[in-house]
Length: 112
Length: 166
Image 1 (cartoon, rainbow over the protein chains, first blue to last red):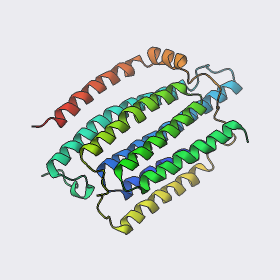
Image 2 (tube, rainbow over the protein chains, first blue to last red; image 1 turned 90 degrees about the vertical axis):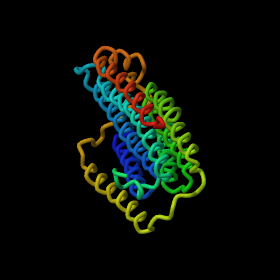
Image 3 (cartoon, rainbow over the protein chains, first blue to last red; image 1 turned 60 degrees about the horizontal axis):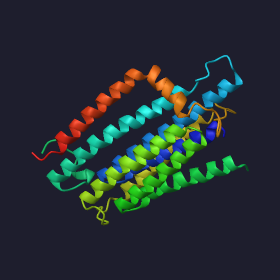
Image 4 (cartoon, rainbow over the protein chains, first blue to last red; image 1 turned 45 degrees about the horizontal axis):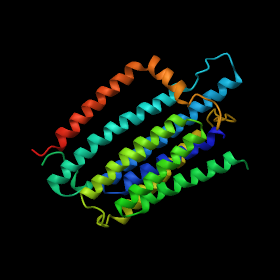
């Protein structure tokens, strides 16, 4: 597939994520859209990695593992996202226990 | 239209449609379920790009672990009724317009990028298989791999400490 299709698809997913973050008020839903944006970036990284591998097939002077780095980068992004979600949801649960709301309009101050 | 193209368009429509439904649906549980559908479609894209290791990791970690965690938290807080308070309609509209404008700007900026007639290789090439990725991961990237285990340990400790009732 031409790489432009993947670029436009990942951009559309990312912008849906941005619009969701701006339009919704529930803090858990906002956190979900952050995950969606991470996934859009992952999809684009994998597509570019395959693009570089195809470039290797055309020009056989470079190393045969061209593009592996991009996929490993995606792997590390998934690892960090899993750690981030566990801590973030713990913080959200703690805030819900204190103020009994998940509305971001009530979460706009760090004190009290 | 070949099978690959057909699958590409089907998975793209599925991903974008369910991502839009995540924005639209008012019930948080439905949002989570549609986001799981989106992640499945993205995993399908990985399979189509022959990145099979990442497809399985995406399914296990995102659809299997992270979204179940979200679902648990939403059900724990008893948000599964449609209790999201009415937001200002104009603010909601402004958010969606801002997202659309960002999309417009990015597409216009990347339209003339130097990727004309570059092809992302689909259904062939073996760099996405677990053998090649594993060789690179444990030769070149072994230190980041070990550091990520420390990250997981500290995230686990942090989650327990934050979630503990004091």
